[in-house]
Image 1 (spheres, rainbow, N blue to C red):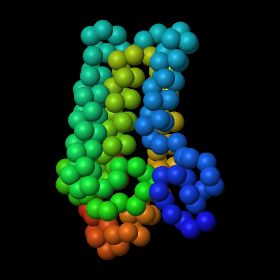
Image 2: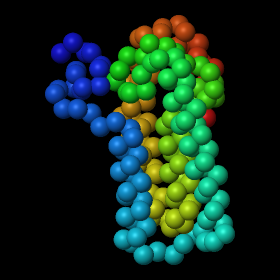
Image 3: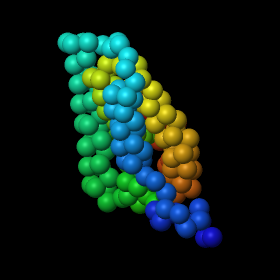
Length: 161
């Protein structure tokens, strides 16, 4: 084991790790399944349910903006791969993990649109998975790669918002 993080799961056995977009899609499917499969009253109804469009749209915008920054700086968007650049421009100027935050906003928006309590439960699971399975490793790798530059950035920008 050489500790290499190339997205293949090296350093963690030969099993490929599941990436955050897969967890996002599984969460979305779980939300819909719970909404359809467990009848419950709606906590939001028409037209209030349309309030979910706001976080959904903000989440999409955050993800697009963050992805553009990754491409602009020609660095990886994948966890477990070493970054070649420390991005600090918008949206990284207000959140160290804007893509995760954007995914959470999209899920919150969908939960509001669905309007049932059961559909909101998987959002909390997604937040825990991201916060404990991805963020610590990513931040450790950034600290190892960018040292003092990372520490200065970390002291100025919050993890989520």
